[in-house]
Image (cartoon, rainbow, N blue to C red):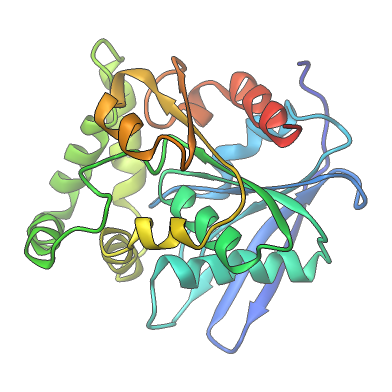
Length: 266
């Protein structure tokens, strides 16, 4: 797939009086819609190179979730459902009738919630190295969730580094760990910690029971356990890939675009 020029127009939509969601729109307004949702402590810019490799007839909407990237919010609720409403506001503003919704990491959880709440509008959910981590899902008992969150409350940068290292296969250039750790440690607070709390407490199994669309998970082979594949076999389709670290959309944009284009046409 050859990279081409796509004029990405910056746009925004207001949600009530406390949240402004900023996003970019590119491609023909009447083209098949693909919504891209970044991961925790990241931003829509992670998909810039991916977007350039997508088919020219595709309508691409790349969203900054609240308090990530250029979006701003003073709201008090930081659940996956509330993030999904950020995305739903963009779909409404763009008058999208049907869309494939793809999310990286935490964005995969948000994508599931968008699909759950908009069954008539979302045709497929795609998760980019998301949903298969058994350390997070299914829903954790409160004591275990608190143990995870306590580490972030006590030493946020150290906890972020540990998170990044956990998503990095052996043999990866150590410089990448430094880049991602520095980037994610700068997430706006208190929303950064609060949204992590929302992810840890998200009941994925309950959400999946109410999500009717097909779900495709593109998972890094070295980070995916057979236990996870077996547990969710039949609920979502796990496709193992060798494209880098947990942040493979940034590292392998052309290959990621090919995966998204193929998933969108299934």
